[in-house]
Image 1 (cartoon, helix red, strand yellow):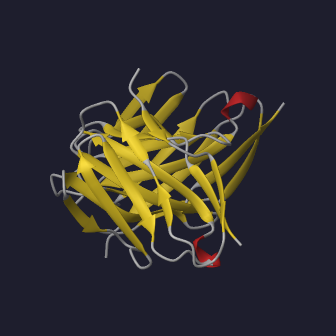
Image 2 (tube, rainbow over the protein chains, first blue to last red; image 1 turned 30 degrees about the horizontal axis):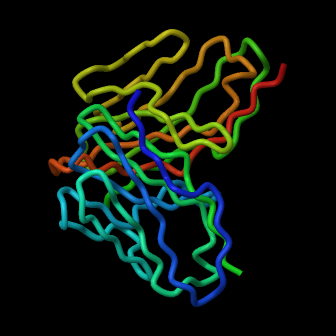
Length: 110
Length: 113
């Protein structure tokens, strides 16, 4: 069964910390995505990558960066965590028929 | 602007009833329209999808109806069951070659036993 694995289910971080969210896929997909999910706002695209070392900004990239050094791994970085970044973060990889999502990381910034 | 508008935000249906969730889009540069189902504590999972050259697609109790001229599509869940209680997202794939999707804001469905 194909999988997208996010390294942490729950994280609590302090304001100003640098936070790394890791995502690994085993499907050899070229395209990977980071979304955040907030009630009433749905899924909003933060960044995506269509190849190793390639990245593009999504709709809400401010305060975030990404890294893709290997095809299977796509990392989301919060440079200096703030309370308004408290959210559910979802990683996905895509094929022609749709996304496969990870289970999500619920991040709380205090 | 690329947007997908989804309604209602929440929906309560009796067991055995029909659940209907609607989505509308404005941009015509979409070529594929999936629906995702998300249970609490899980990531969304692909439920059913349709291409714009088809007006209806049915898989079991789930049906997508697509109206290209009105730029609307909807999900119908027939004989709704308590196990269908979840959040549903419609989505539209952007014509860009990168398989990027725009999502609706989600509908929280509760099916009463």
